[in-house]
Image (cartoon, rainbow, N blue to C red):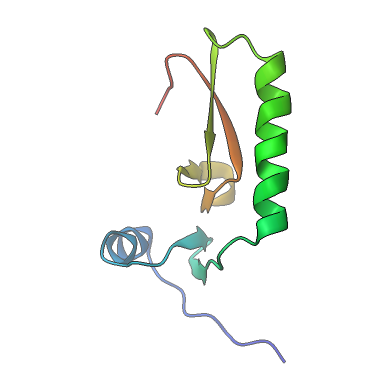
Length: 92
């Protein structure tokens, strides 16, 4: 049986994020606590970044990882991605 998650507003989520030592993602009103990454996961992310970096024009693109929170309006969600590719200059 799965637990019913409390629905919260975006502003409440952002306030909790600012005041918390733990990260959480926000998906359509639900706050989902994140777990720490394991060794193998981190190795995969680094290898992926190296492979992508070799193929990108670094003057047009930037690669970010793990700590960059992104908002996806169509999904009503904030995610922390493992890898994020942004145009230069980034459009926030």
